[in-house]
Image (cartoon, rainbow, N blue to C red; front, side):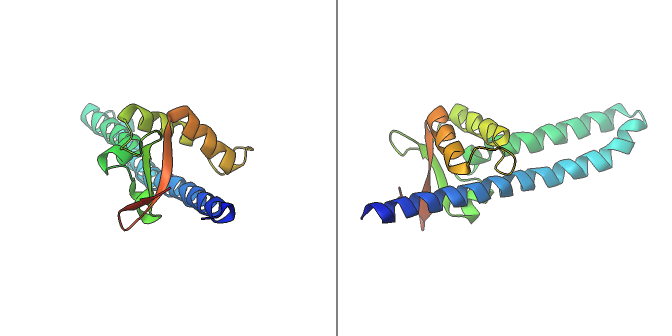
Length: 144
């Protein structure tokens, strides 16, 4: 494999990673909007049970965003759709939960559509900070 082919595959994986971040955040955003619009008027009525259910639901949706890579064995729904996978950098094994949560926090902080840094630089920064990386997973085979 020559350098151009390797560079192309790396950029392709990063591009699919960017789209998967946006899809995962959209999947989380839609239920949160529904919870806010449905629970807002209900909380205003002063019912403590409804307030607790709404808070529990919102925390559950946010937790699902941060833990989806661990729950779904290294690939959240967006990553599965775009055929990529999150692995530990040194040994290509599943990433620890602390690294996954830190990675999600950095993904939210470096939202692909807002930050001025180009996304390839963001992805490399996130990989170095969390000691995880994105690899292609086509038919269960990992390709770096």
